[in-house]
Length: 426
Ligand code: PA5
Image 1 (cartoon, rainbow, N blue to C red):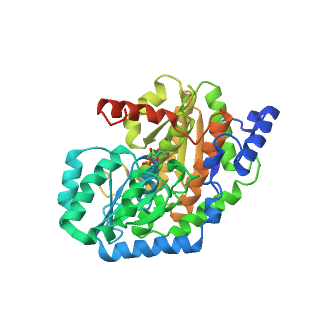
Image 2 (tube, rainbow, N blue to C red):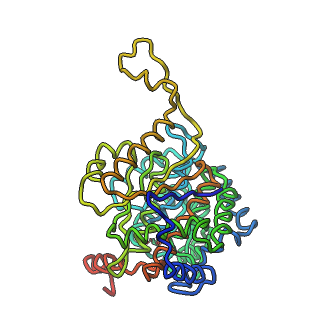
Image 3 (cartoon, rainbow, N blue to C red):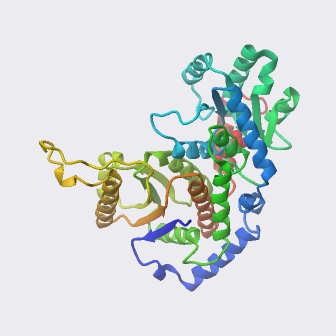
């Protein structure tokens, strides 16, 4: 299982001796857990060190939730939200309830209308809450939890505590003290894994398992990627290859990367990728701005800019080789829509042609291209893909001499909001 990385120009010519040396040092920083932010490199060997007993525990809790609930409300923001959302959306079947359990997210935005309507919706369902916050102090999910906890206690009385699961730090935070006091079931966000690298921990696994997906396969895919990317090879290591091309394009004056896909199921993988790369690389006046488009939809909105606007963009297509479901264009007797020339073509084939046409048009318009191809959308391949992105992200940030694992800039707005709202101590 491999992700293939193709570049519209000559990859070999990017590999100078200086770069090669830097990549070797970076590879060593990551694998030996030294270098900038090294105490947050727990994600590197997490897939291979995931214990069966831990997965079993998550699966049992998921089964219990499915046996007594119709809805799991997952409260979290950023890395405590986007990983599970990305996997759930990638595996969902549109217009169909895949599972007897519905997963709904809250706390990823602040909206009285959203929370009020959610609570009204929950009234006719059996409910479990999973509150996720590594710090245990993030305001947006804390606000959502205040309302939803009150709702659960009013509705379930003493039983509420058994319907609330907390995923947080092992030692600190307001959420941890509350969980201990109330006796909520707890999962730990490992100390050495930051939010945006946490999808393979309980942060991502519990909501994914509760929705009925195979977390063993997800971890197996990530584990395979972990093994693959342990090899320092600038050609076969796809994470290194992608990082090298991005870094080269950034140096050539392309500070914006657009992740393009033709599959709506990947929309939240794009959102997760934006957080991962934006929060990891965007520091010290440096970093590639991550943006995303969904084609064909955005060919009819942002396509004009990409083709013809300010030249600062490069485009990375995320393509899926095989689809699980498809349609073939049929021959119509009247051909009134003049589409008979397409008969026999699958819609997946149409998208492949559209990719070729778009890539070539954008290339002519001065937009360099990378194409990432994965085989199919299932748990194993998604696990592999997400680990691949995390590894590329670490290389990319280190190539810019940036710590990929902190997010000092996110704190600024938080301090301001505390000041504006007069939080004690600010
Ligand atoms: O990647 C990160 O660390 C952040 O984006 C966090 O995930 C986000 O700020 C939410 O933080 P917490 O899980 O502490 O509530």
